[in-house]
Image (tube, rainbow, N blue to C red; front, side):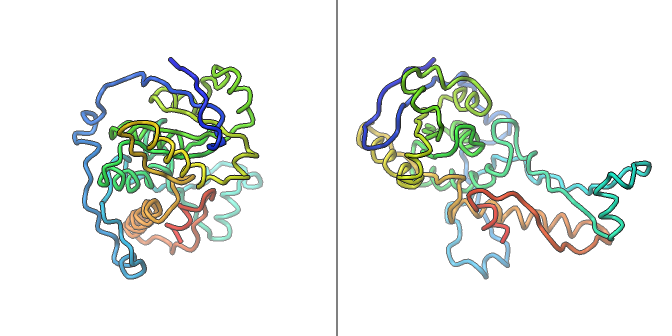
Length: 277
């Protein structure tokens, strides 16, 4: 299933683990269209007025969209003293949840697939045949990128930051089969490791850049597309510009609904924040 090899020292990457994909079944039949097909994207009017650089290669259709927008309500017989929802209702505050965890299955679900629809459309339109990205050992972004890349015929290369990099260099089996690493391995990713210290000294962008250069020079015909940590760049941010438009359309469909005053979300690499903001 795997073979370990040392990579060039200047990459500051400890180990490259190459895994065979466990399935070769085409996923396009599951959706009724070729998943690598790009569709024209028309930005919302407010975005056209705000941004000068629009996504020129459209987007793929990989996510299950639109994701639901649910109102959270307290149960009538619930103890008011122990329910935050009761307290919010007493202050005339309504709480809604946008279920972007339902954007895909276990392999692509979450916020990253929205960004990847635009990033991978750009990669395919520019004739790249592989992707390189970076994240933590159990990175949701890396898992979603590897899975989505396989779905559209691109080779995934992942740089995972882990305190176990030295152990994995000594014994590649140390990487294990836990959590997102299992998905990374199932789709046949080539996994590179680096320590948190190496990551901090060199930076994620430089690591991705050097690995792309290494692959281009060492593997004939390999043309890797760099994707930053979290998929957060100008192209990826369109995923949540589109997500905001989707949410606003849902909000407008709520009859006699309250005004939307605040949007609360988790923030890591900033791509979701850039799209929503």
